[in-house]
Image (cartoon, rainbow, N blue to C red; front, side, top):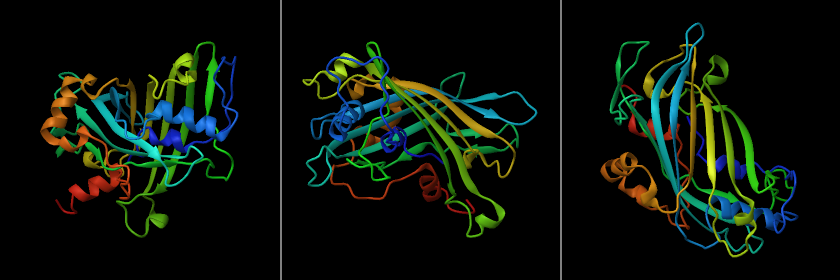
Length: 289
């Protein structure tokens, strides 16, 4: 249902475009781009733990009716970085796990069940709990070209703008989805931004950064909407935290209660396959239950 949050930008290696330029910020080589990406996403210090946090709302869009604000949402991604194998070219690995929780949009209470306004059925809410969502960022992009960070500089600010269309086989569908439908269809849109001076400073191993994230996708599977027309879209913003404790009290309480593993990232040598919302839902929701 959801490609790992934040990780999509790391996979989008397009040419850097600078508008204005800034003294000390050089992105002329793949190594320069890798270093800047690592400072933004995590830290140049191997094993230093970094936490991202975001919040916002999820809405419905159904033909012929006004959009509805369905949920308040909160999410976090905890990570650490280290070199990618024996590479000495700046290539690195991010070992991460992440959560996104659904809340009542008025009271802010974390939802355990939800009454579907279209079907009238009360359904169990399945929060996003993806472990791991690891990424490998190398000196060559997927086309074999030198990695270039999609960074724009304007005055004293930098930002990354990336749109990632997603269309692939739905792991919850059967073997005949190519014939009868069942593809997962979504779009992820990211904006990262921050201060140029901090990013250019060679003494900074990690830099403050902010994020805006929008996602449009099919209905969440736990909503039990079947093939009803419509979609869900998320509109959120957040930032890299100075420390884990700086996230909201509600999300910290939820982690303490139900997701204690998420107080720390996976180990850097973690080689497990990545989890997605689709695969996690399949694990916790056997067919017929």
